[in-house]
Length: 496
Image 1 (tube, rainbow, N blue to C red):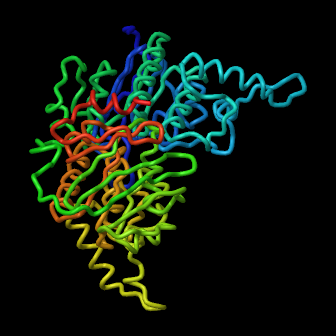
Image 2 (image 1 turned 90 degrees about the horizontal axis):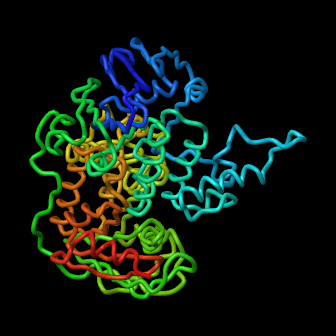
Image 3 (image 1 turned 90 degrees about the vertical axis):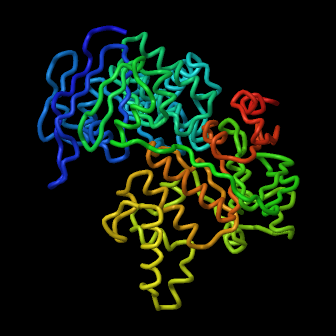
């Protein structure tokens, strides 16, 4: 790592009306350095990055690149100064190829002035091959898993002569193997003297890949620590301004009879002969690499995908689930990993979203039972400590953790017997994760059957009673709680 200053953000202040979001924040990045920005949702991380990316303009302060003051007045100006931001939410064009997305807006032209598709694909394929990714430049983005789409975002950023690359929760959709690929990419960028700003709530990643950790809380910088000198508990305390009594919440519960039994379930494309059980009061984990078929299996159980064959039983009785409506009617809930795309209607308010699943209870013909609806919203607001100004607040304006609590409330209002949680803590901060874990534990204690898909193996190990592992569309093993280990899970996750 060079000692040459690449980026300096000095005394950055930003307010929206009377709400001061950033207050005198400083951030510096040297050439080839990886600097983490850590903080709870609402700490000011996104605003700081949007100022660097030209989306917002700071009220005061300055930005220097290689010591020269820059007026980053737009995203185009940021790009011209070598700033590339890889957002957590994927913004690729799904019906275009990987190559077309990588070169979007800067396509190479042939002598006739037309887009040179072969050259574009050649350059993209070279990038893909250099990174040892199992992709083809001419593949449609729509055909890729979320994890692979995230890697395409990274290819797109590094292909455009970046000086500073910002990665916002880059591993939220990646498997362990893909995380290792990402870390290899980061090390390659460091050798090219590119500076990296790395935003993640996964503390283990910060210790593995970063040189320094900058901590924000309530719009102020409260820590700038060399990673090798950092301690996990101290970082958490700096983030939240208090000690978390416990992170994972896992109490001993009574585990009852089998709630859900799946026998030899198959899909035409994604998985085959999947059999598993889950009991009332039990938290059953599903581990595996991205693309292993975990999500597709659960979406088939939920009726979002059509099964090829097999049987689904609830309380020992066979169910014919042809669509999600059938699953919901039988007390099965599915919390999607893509809460913004599939779990919520972001342009509608909190009240509307919370009432979506049990709308029939609040709307009878032309009559709306607002009193009962408002009462339900208030019950879950208090129960889950959801931070909202009112039930009419737009859901898209909430933090990731509060959005996830709204999704959970939406399903719990319908009193499900089985809840499928797909990556339930993806993209939320440490304090919000602890709250979600406590909610999951309380649901299990109340006798609800919970199935939890997670790419974070420590989450599976610390929250679940049993775990199934999948690889390439097959369940390759079942592990009991006393046999849990990351090594065992990874071995089964790569077993063909």
